[in-house]
Length: 76
Image (cartoon, rainbow, N blue to C red; front, side, top):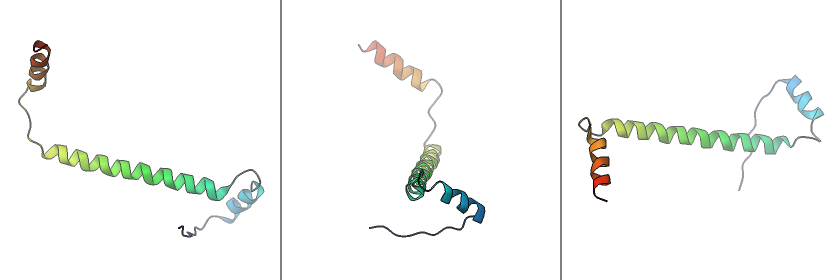
């Protein structure tokens, strides 16, 4: 199911869009742009939440990562 959304655009822009009506499917173009923008915003929101979560994690002592890498290499 879909819904209708209206926007206001300058009259001159509408005239130019009308000139290109046979070449451009404006509904599809706008729909794709909105879908893309929504996905981008959702990803940014998720990234901000992840960054916030990471900031709450306790810090590891310096050298911990390299120690784990060395231990893993030596175990093989």
